Amino acid sequence: MDESLESKFATLKSKNFKIDLTRGKPGSDQLDLSNDLLSMTVPAKSPSGVDVRNYGDPLGIPEARSLGAELLSAPVDNTLVGEQSSLLLIYQLVLANYLFGLEAPWREQKNLKFICPVPGFDRHFRLLDDFGIEMLPVPLTGSGIDIEAFKKLLEAHENIKGIICVPRHSNPTGDIYTDDNMKELMKAGKAYSREFLFILDHAYLLHDFAPTIDQTSSWELAKKSDVLDQTAIFSSFSKVTFGGGGLSFAAAGTKLFDLLVRQRASMIVCSDKVNQMRHLEFLQNKADVLKHMSKHAELVKPKFEVAFSALDSLDSKIGSYKKPTGGYFISYNTNKPIAKRVIALCEEAGVMITPAGSTYPHFHDPANSNIRLAPTFLGLEDLKEAMEVFTISLQLAFEE
Ligand SMILES: Cc1ncc(COP(=O)(O)O)c(C=O)c1O
Image (cartoon, rainbow, N blue to C red; front, top):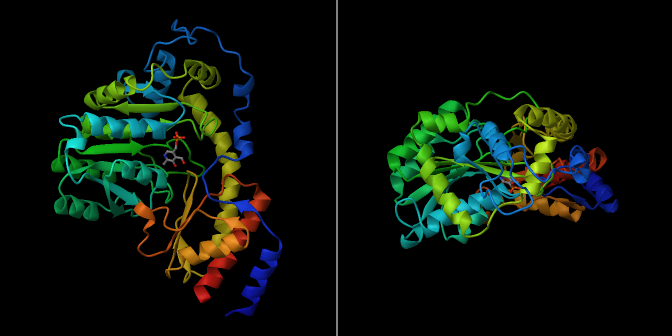
């Protein structure tokens, strides 16, 4: 064991840090970018004449729907504005299929399955688990789904109801699915079943902080692949304006859209149109949103660079990662099965990291190697310290 590593770790431990690197939350400087929303007075009526104070317009006020449609490149008629959480909309879509379904309710069927790219988003896994849906992991390649592995799963299993994935700046790997990858995915899913769902969670649609390859819109790809009736696309302003305080958007092929609308009608009379109006006063169109997102990028980029330079200082025999060009996460893979140990060491030194295994269904990372880092929430100084703890812990665990 390297003595100097141990003494470095002891010195860091003696500083009694209390640093939380667990969740991908915007930093307070990012939230400040939207402070105008806090003091905004909004007109009682939208330009289209909707009284935003009252019930009505369950799909959102027309201007907000147009903004959502513009962002998702979908027709307005197929786009709705929900509450403040896209995860809630995704939950409602799965619930709608479970209770009613496009052809038959999923609840009447046995052994429901879904394909989940890994490493992935823990809340997707939790959502599917609520419905007793078995999760079949499929690896990501750095530029999307491993199509061969995806096809093998389709061959090997019956009753796979769909895939849930994050095609841009995937959480946590940062994968940008190429157009070809999406087309292959859609082709194979369509051949498997005309009811196979593509749930495309575009939480990071506009969240580039470095040059990123172009993607054709998911709507366009689904249309060209003739799978619109199997496709639902989601996004939100949680990381545009306020975390958990923005707007959410969904677009889907008509049958699926109607199913979602039907489900939501049992749950809510209408969403918060005052918040929609407030957001519209602040961000009227896609150009406004993109301009606003470039301010986020300026704040977020230096944080990722701090994390990158710490990780780049490590010997490549310890592990590897791919630099994301947007989103909120870094996904680090250790070469030895030491993720749990690394995270325990970090915790011992006062740095909380997302629990090992969180990026896999049922917390089961078979290689015990994936670690998710979320650098945005911390200030630069805390982040530097957290990364020092992390890199020393990695080296210690590697040598143990
Ligand atoms: C992939 C992904 N989807 C959805 C969400 C949550 O979004 P919302 O606040 O709109 O529910 C997150 C938040 O971390 C996320 O990473």
